[in-house]
Each structure stands twice: as C-alpha cells, then as structure tokens.
Length: 483
Image (tube, rainbow, N blue to C red; front, side, top):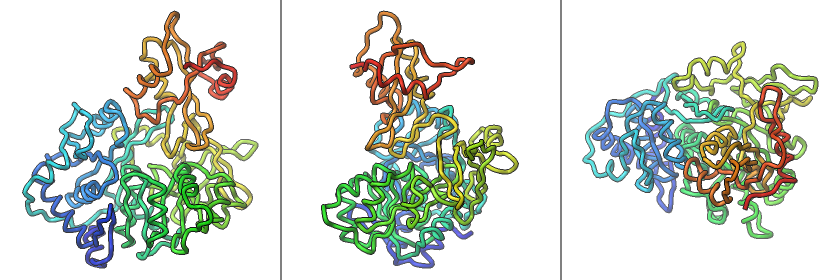
C-alpha cells in the first residue's frame, strides 16, 4: 500500500489531523513537520533498523513516531512508566542501539545510546525521501507485553495488523473522516497507537492529551466536536463523576470505547443517563487492539460480556469444561507475526492454527463472549497488567523477605490492585514504608503492592509446591497488616 501519511496528504491535505494543547495541524502541516524531523533523525540515527522511542503523549512524540515510519524503521515503543532495569531488559532483548527520548525522561539507560528530542531538533535537516510503500507484512512496531510468567515478550506488529484493526473498528463503530477521537491513553500502548493509525487510514482528527484530566476533557467534549474516546474503567468512572450534576453529553459525542476490564451496571446506567454509549471491548497487544466488542444496545442485557468478534475475526472456545468454560482462541489478520527472539514461544501459542489468548471464557446462547479470568493470575489494574510472579521475584531479592505471595483484590477506582502476604526472615523488622520504597526502586509504581500483610499460617500450596493464590486471598481478611 502507498505510505499512509503521504496517501492521506494526497487525499485530504487541509483536513485537521491532530490537536494538542491549543495547536491544530492539518495533514499537510503534520507531514511538513514529520518530514523535517525525519531529515534531522537521518543525521543522528545509526544503521540499526530498529529504533526505540521513549515518551509521553506529546505532539512532538507523535511526530517522532511518524517520522521514523517515513524512514522505514521498526519502532520499539517503550513504556515511559517502567523502571530503568525493566527498560534495560527490553532494550537488550530487542537488540536496539539507540533510544530517541523525550527531554523530560531523566532515567539513565547504560545499555543504549540515549538521543533526546532536543538534540534531534537541533540538527540541520537533510533531504530524505519517505518510503513509498507500506508492505502489509512489514513489521512497523514492536511493543512489549508480559506473559503469564511475567517475562516480557516483544510483540511484532505489521502494517497489515494495524490496517485490519482499523477496518474492524470502523465497521464496528461506524467511524468516518468527520470523527474526532480523543487519545488520552498512552500512545506507547496499543490502545493509543491504534488511534494514530486510524487517523491516517480514516482521515479523522486525533485530539491528543499528555495526561488524563477528566475535568479538562469533559470541558472539551462539551465545547467541541469530539465524537469518540478510548478509556479504561477508571477513566470512564472519572469522566462520569466529573460531569456537572444535571448535565448531559452533547449529541456529537457518541462513544466511549472501553478496554482493560468490564464496566459495572451502575456505571453503564450512569453513562446512559448522560447520553453516551459505552462500547465494551476485548483485545491485546498481540491482536493490535480490539478484536471483540459489545454493541452498546446490549450493554445492559449482556452486562459482563465483551461482545462478539469484529468482522475480520474468528473466535472459538477450546477444551471447554462441563460448565462451558474454555480457552479463548482466535484467528485474525490483526494477529502479530511473532515474538522477538522467541519463535518457539510464539509457535506454542497456536493450536491447529488458532491463537490461544491465555484467557478463559464461555459463550452464551446468543454467541456473546464472557471472560472468567486469565489462565494465569494476572491482575488488571487501571488498564495495566500486573503479574504476581514478576513482583514476587523482585521482592525475594530483599534480604528481609523469606517468602512473598502477591494477589489482586477488588478496588473501586482501579478495578483491582496488588497486595502481598509476606513471610519475613527471623528477626527481621521492616515497615510498609520500607517495602514500598524497595518496590518503587525496582519496578513500575503501579506494580508495587498497595498493602502488605504478615503470614499468619502455613503457605497454601499444591502437592507440587505451587502457591494456591485463591486461598492466599482468604489470608488477608484475618491477617495482621504491616504498618
């Protein structure tokens, strides 16, 4: 296919492409800025076909991603919230030599050359010819996700993955070039990056926010032409709660696309009462965003369901038990072509040509999918995935800790949060402050347990020695909290 940005400029050069902090750029203006950056990047990048980007949601970061696409580079999108040690693992695994990073990032990454946005902008641009075509089987982005063991996997996403994801969303949501989609979720996540690609494919406007502020976004929705926003459950609740009492959203604002977990009945009814539809969806990094979605007209009658597969997607349940609960497996043109340096792990994810998502669920009589949990023990907190094994492994390096078990507990704001049961070394004395500080030094803050409890009875284990987490959750009710 023709280079998407160049094709979009040829089709609708004057249409608004992106708005950010009072700045509005047409596709032609965006392209001019992107090609200038591409010329500057060409002066500082080495020959490695892969380049990492480390940033928050800014217009300059948005332009940097597009500039790297114009140069034909594979873009490794790093999570700005990760600790340096976590980033170092991903950087070494994906074998990159340079990270182009926002000036606001102050972490030291010894394993790679760090190139700041300011340094790139200081260069005199050289003439560059943007790549003419985007081959649908060409890898354009790599995003790291975690498996049930918590070990990160680099997911290779092609232009074809992103294209068919955009097609599926368009058919499901009825999107057109006249839409304006809010990107307040991180563009280094698939939820945010997919909005960027949809903009180029549909010709729609992206309203970009560096951080989520429910009051500010509500004001913009009420005053402008915003039609769609991507949210996780906490964002959905915050937006509804921040809306002034008695006020409804305008008719122009049609959809809140919900990912990262289901919405409860009270929240869905609240959304209906203020005149906005909530489209619950299911997807993952490996499928380049949503692959299953619930029609908003079914939101109440099918509460708890993530819906039906989008048009390009096939779904089946494998190895269902007597209750109809089985392994969620899919086929889709949005499916990743592989994991970085882990071909065997990628091959193992398939069964008879079907990709096993690792989730468990069941279908009702009408074909709606309901998820019952991860095959593993993942905690979904505010749209972020937390794996207990990873957190436990880190804390076991703390000298005072003999053993630790991490589980998720319900949380009104975040959906779920991690907490830990801790067995200390004899004679050790640590406070919750010590435990929090240690965690924040080694892993992302959202992964750090929100509370710590002393072990009060033997660890619940299987005959093979594996921790039974569902029993561990019962400990918390009658266990002494570490203060």
